[in-house]
Length: 302
Image (tube, rainbow, N blue to C red; front, top):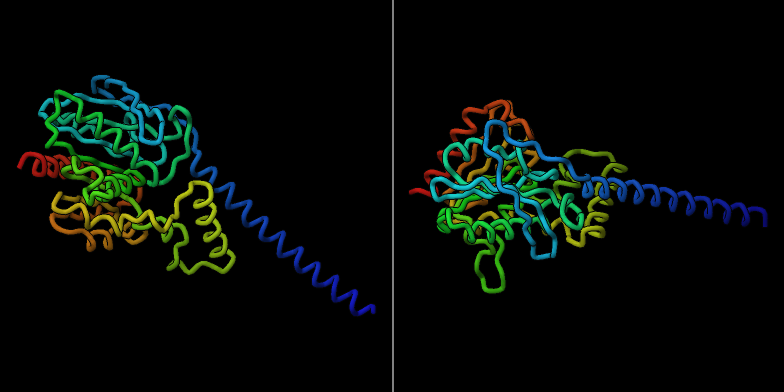
């Protein structure tokens, strides 16, 4: 009798401990994903020595109002700029100053964290609606030739413009065929894989936590992170040109080489020596500016 009670107590204690560990794992993952997708709204910083942009509020397909800054075009072409979690307004990545100075119109779009009403940042899932709203705006501009629209994106923004340019609707047509050329810097190749990092050699508890993070993202955002996959989308952009930029220290982590191999011609890959995520422009500023201006010149003014 005593042994039976002890066995039951032991089993109950084990189950309780396991339940507590699961609760802690899920709780920490929930807090982490919530913080990642709700970063708060940051005030933009104006570009120095550049005329103040026009401010517009764009309506997205999923009912948000997003602030956008537009620098009018002087050459008939325009570039849509999408940034990371903090958006792309002002003097942040991706760098747009050289494009503005070269005469391109530039449309920068703010983070979903600053939308009306505030919304979650979705790491490239629903940001395709932001890209669509930006393209729709550019198509209304009398200073823009609709055949001369490009896009540039950093991190999440790079993922978004690849997906926006490549995704197919039921008609079989590209979602945003108006994007005639794109530059994508520092994005991931597949979100699910990027979260769990299968080749990183993590300990078992760390692996369990990362899988929980991926699952919590799916629950909170409503999108399977393994389905957010520029690696699977990028080949669909051809024959429009793609220019991928990665620092040498982020190339493997972001799957830059795999995306380049998956893309169809015309395509370019620039691996920035000594570069890392968010630092490529700083370590190779002049070359960065020259390369993106030349890329859009060749792509939009053949």
